[in-house]
Image 1 (tube, rainbow, N blue to C red):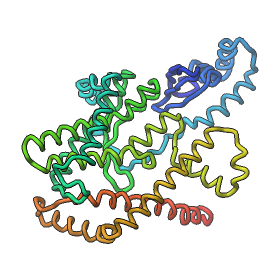
Image 2: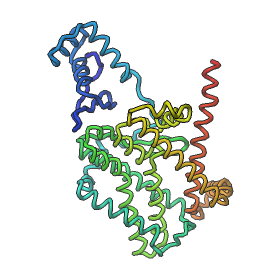
Image 3: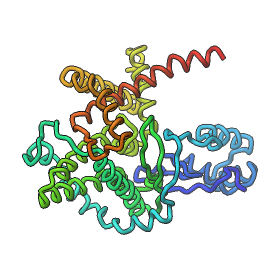
Image 4: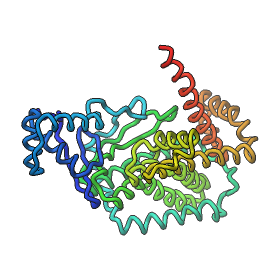
Length: 383
């Protein structure tokens, strides 16, 4: 057994740094750190590791100096503690091997040239579908059967995850499984595409957009099906899909837009870190702007953007959609009663409540954070 307890894999990036994969975790490291980790991975004790390091670098460091330096370095990686997932009740539904085989069937869709042409075309069609199509009521008040909607949405979200897996496998030759978990109070599917850390920036972008890309194909398919059959449900559902894709690209919740931004910038835990930077600014604006690290400015701007987006969204919802906000609890109660009474065919979801659902989600999410900061902090102080 080597000193790391696992065998790292290194992939060199264009900027000269490396991606280190170890025990299903990924780190962006420089040449010096890579050399230290390589020495530790090939040695059973620090005497061997220091000799290897000296051999790799053609320099001389004592065993004591190397041991101290490498030990401090490992503390930063914290390899012994498993990273806590933001999901509850995680369960793999489709194992890695099976997911990879199925994903290979749609891998051709992720050829970069074809992808960008198709993705751009599908985005333009979705804009037309929402704002310019007159085949359904576009005022935002049309209704769709909630049972049929969830059944079809389940199919599209499975393809969403297979899109991520297919892109990851195409670009890295690796993929994880597809699973199910609970995020806040909501059931979600997820796919493990951590291997995309080894990919180029363009490949990372494609892999992160792959899920929405697959669902946009369904937007087109259901729209055409509705026009061909004359069934307005399918055209209405295609519009619902556009709204769902939009929600997934928002970067302030842990969805596709969030991971896309995180991978592009190489900054993990964007929400937490950006929130801290905003707090630092509010406490001492003068001291904050003395920093010369562009990452600090980026995190601050990201945090401000999220805050302004949430405030603006909440304002417009309260200002222009307050009737639906007040009616929402009763509306959900009525839907629940119809569901429990077996009147599934009568259950319909009014699309105007999509934004209200997001409004309540934001209120719950931020309310939970405030509650934890107040009562969680107090509990720690008194224990």
